[in-house]
Each structure stands twice: as structure tokens, then as C-alpha cells.
Amino acid sequence: MTASIAEPCPEPPRHTVPQTAQPQTAHRPVLRRLVDILAAAPATTPEPPPTALAVSDPAASVLAERVLRAAVEILSGRRPAQQLSAVLRPDLLTYLVSLQVAAGHLEPRVRRVLAQQHAADALEAVALVTLSTGVRALAARFDKHGSRWWCTALQLRLTTGDLRAPRR
Image 1: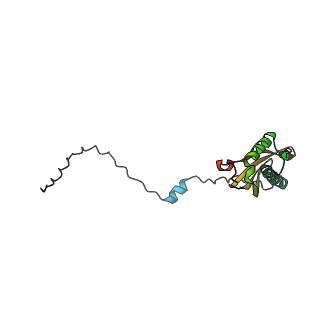
Image 2: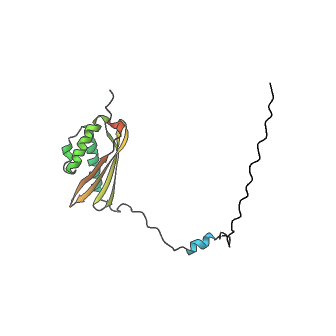
Image 3: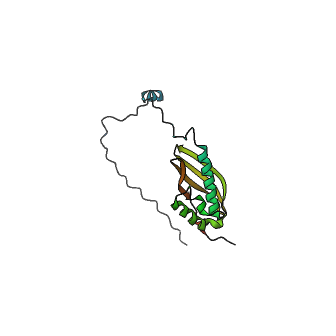
């Protein structure tokens, strides 16, 4: 066996960096006190976030709860969809029937209904619905036309897991 001697690494090349022109004046940060900054700022008060009406229509909240509970019964097939034709637009009835086909096997049950009136003629409500695959939200909007409340929007988001055929 012959021993080999490792040669040392060559020295790295040495380059000189050219001197660049120095700026005429160096920028120096100015420190200011927070008290001075706040004193110079205009005094503005933030607008409060929009809130619900102080006086809401309790009958509207009761109607919203009844409609959402009935909609869940329609989803499960325990109630005919035409029973809500007095308060739901026809396209929403069709939507609800299409959901009934998709979600009928999921055994929907209402956990809780929340309603919030945002204007004298607008109310939004949500029902927390327990399905066999999890918890979903059934959201609705009610608008007042004359003296009657109408459900003008209704939405239940189902996942792809909800739409699979039930296992037996």
C-alpha cells in the first residue's frame, strides 16, 4: 500500500472591491416619541360595527324557526314540500325537493335555530342540522313584502361524503 499525501487546497483568489462613491450625507433615522406622534394624529373615533335592530319583530324570528324546522322535515321526507309554498319562492321549493333526494338518507335533525333581524324588512336565520355524516348549516334569508315575510334565499351545503349512497 502506498500512502498518498493530500495536497492543501489552493488559496482562494483575492479580488479587490472598488470603492463606490459615498453619499453626500448619510441617512440617519429620526427617533420620535409616541406621545408626539399621537398628538399630531387627527382625533377620529372609529364607527361602530353595524348591529341588529334594537327592536326586532319576534313574530319574524318565530316564523324563521318554524320554516327552517319544516324544511329539515322536508329533507328527511317526513313532510311534503308543498306545505311551505306559502312562504317559499317556487324555485326554493324545487331546490328543497332536490336536496331531499340527495340528503334523505342522512337522517337530518335540527339542533338549534338562530335568527337575526338586520333591518325592518330583512331577517337572516340559520339552523344547525345534524346529519349522519356530520353537522351542517341550513341558512335562509327572509324579506318582508307588505305585511308578509317571504323566504327569499335558502342554502344547505352538502359535501361529497354526504352524497354517497348509504351503507347498509
